[in-house]
Image (cartoon, rainbow, N blue to C red; front, side, top):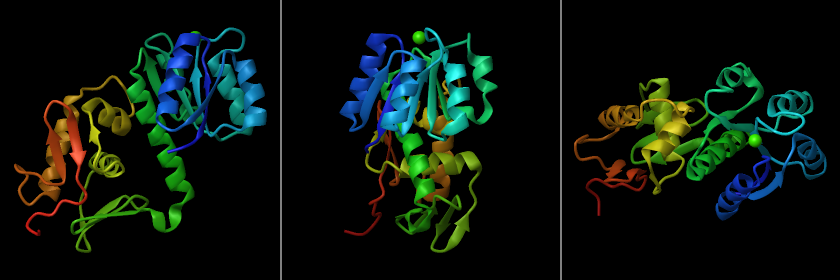
Length: 234
Ligand code: CA
């Protein structure tokens, strides 16, 4: 996955670390040490996503976001120290697309960045690209439905969200932390929720939920969606 990402962060070491992880994942990051510098880069570089710190020298992240939103709809992912800014952040409404509390794991941050890109790109490529097929199932990302041989399977919004998240990275081991962050969109919840939802999905997808073929448990590591699963064939 590619994309231009601007990191606005005054802690040099953190900015470099995040930048390194994003680069490693195929992204094209640049850093700015202040909101003012960020604006200058936005204008001539046109980033596709912004990772924004809140506590900055000069103009702070909230002010940046407010001004930025007057002219741009580019996704913004806020990173900020827990507690102090939490209320204000929840009050931002549609201004920020994601929020990650510091300290965070760079791995989780990269997963969130990928999720934001996927959302934006799916939205932009609505026609035709929104289907994912596995076994006898067809998942429609846009209509948010799952069908088995043409018959709709009833899923709750979170069940769908969880399946949608897994099917977008088939074959990849996803840890519980990443799944939780990607589906529930916050870092404060109970991670055991993920296992509960995986169990529910297995009951709806698997012929034998105790011996799953689509959503595999990778012991000690997480879960893997296996789209090429064949139960009896070959
Ligand atoms: Ca800071």
